[in-house]
Length: 534
Image (cartoon, rainbow, N blue to C red; front, side):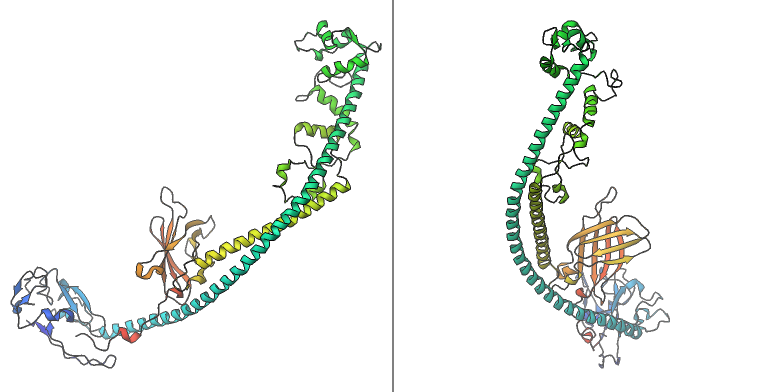
């Protein structure tokens, strides 16, 4: 049995010549010093020492299998494939001489009779071509990355300059807002006073109108009750109206009627004024249709008032006028349309609304008051416009400060992804990645969008933290956790989402190509030394 493999090979790879290295079969060059032919062999785990001629004798002496690197004797042994021209490799010793070619240089089948072909050169050539392609992509990607870094640097300077300009404009706007606030408040005070005077005059006018109506109705009722036309209303005449029964027990007695008349038998027109105040809420005119059965939900007094008010409604315009609001509400409604100030406000309560039906709507403001309202509204509009501009500038400052301080990588190479979104369409869904913002999923053929997480942090390993993005706190799964997404970045010339998957329930994985992750490639030749291990 052959215990050693003696290689004398002349290989032209990279313009260099290999050298002969003696060692037992299956032993890598890195462990050659442990296998010296003229010395006893000590198991690599230190468990025992045996004569060197028992190395590769097809009998397992060492517990760790290190005495049989080139045979299948030890179940836990490993055989080293030199694979000159390709990559060295280890295979389990059990595969040695099993009739299957595992090493591309055929060294594992030295005694099986298997017809193996040395394919290492071809594999090495293909791998080298593939590595060259990868290296070329990495090289181009890194060139793009350097360009992105320059653009990010210039963009950062532009944003800082813009932030300074916007902060200066904020100071000017703050001063303008305060000046316009003073103008507004100055204009609103006489407006408020003028509107209050107008309202008071209208309330006084309505009181006069109501008093005149009440007197007219009282006179009409007196004549209606005075059946014998003797110029007075008696107890008997009052009793003819059972709806005036004080206790509404169905029996309107003489004493009750006399009580309404102030304890006397009859009253004249002067004394009737006091009686009228006690009965006018209940009195139903004999001339009113269906006087005994008033419509549901309407009192007799309301019917009477409707009849009377119909005669006076033509004195005022029929258009509806907005209701005047309380003083404390005026500041909250500064943005009301100008038309809301040209027309006087209407009453709020049901009782005041009925008054409006009786006396008509409030008359339009006089020219002087309307001019004050228009002036105050103009001041409000100018103030609101300036205040809105100030809010927009404050939002702009916050956004700029956030973008300037954001971690876009060591040289801000990832800054170009900000405010951008990238989509990947699969058979069922459209996935959308908006870097530093959110990840979402939407059914391809219609349906609502589902959040797969919002920006959390960079989550790569310590030596390459910017290789992984983490998005968290997405839409919750049914009886499960909130959705989250891990985005793995790989080097490439393009910026594109290449794949999505769901390795675990509600936890998504997205592959994302970007030149920003590309590293400066090492020299290709440095990874392929001219000297090969033999």
